[in-house]
Image (cartoon, rainbow, N blue to C red; front, top):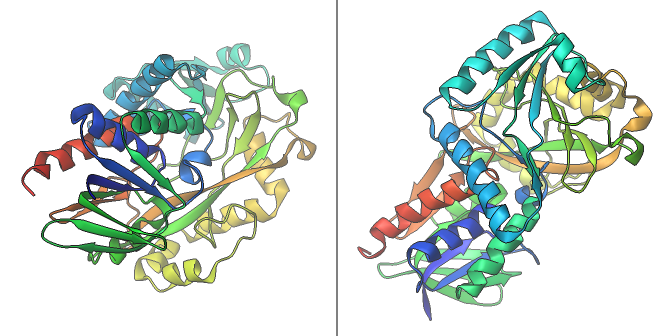
Length: 400
């Protein structure tokens, strides 16, 4: 059998893409290949569950538009499917004058992006969050929380009901394209499809190279480590509490996050990972490390962000330093509050010249589209990202 479409990767973007193709072309034959035993096992299933409003992103950019559209689409989908979510809002807290000035810039960016935001002074912050301290804050009411594993499971149920096949435990070993189709081989069997879409996340560069594509980037894994607060501290905050991000760095900083299942987590930091899929602390996979050590762009990134990298590593190894980041805006926290939590791995695409890729990055042939980078926050933006991917593929489907 030759499928119309094969999709590699059953994370939230891959599953949302299958759904969008079926919405546009209901009789399509689709197979989704996933190497794990369940969907949403990696980046989708290892994040904080925040539905982001999109305040950080450059006005007019695809990231800003997709985040805003994605937040609305995610909430609408949850209502339709009966998935629990909450609009709890987010407070970005300025703890010094430099951060207060940066907060004003974020406020202007929010207005340009069409996102409702409200300046809060010190007294107002105390009224809203008695356990949080700062000079001022920016309230973003549209920010929410959800369990993206449940969203992904709902996508999976919809696409299988629509006739798609999800082949779990199918690790891709080879990809070969000819004039008529693409053959995707696993240890157990081979699949043929007229078009292939690869949403490989942490393995996206390897899958592109496996398919014979010339790429100018590598995936460098960054671990985001969370702590969980005790149940007795679950009522510590009402909103999500974020620091004012440093615009020179690609990560937003350690924050306090309520989860939809009633927990309170703190994090993540951003430390260089030594395994692309190593969620346990001190996970190490030589192949993954050698991959980025041999890539010139990695060393350029290290040179540009050396001081920040050392600080993040110190925070990872020394719990007191991690706590100090949290106590800037929540001084009531103690070491005893930081209980072991989960970790996530961010697939950071890095170009050969050391540029950190913050936008979409695709690699294409006549019959393949590889999503080499889906910008953070991809989970929030999954539906409009999937719609764009589906439109790109369907526009040329009949032609090939």
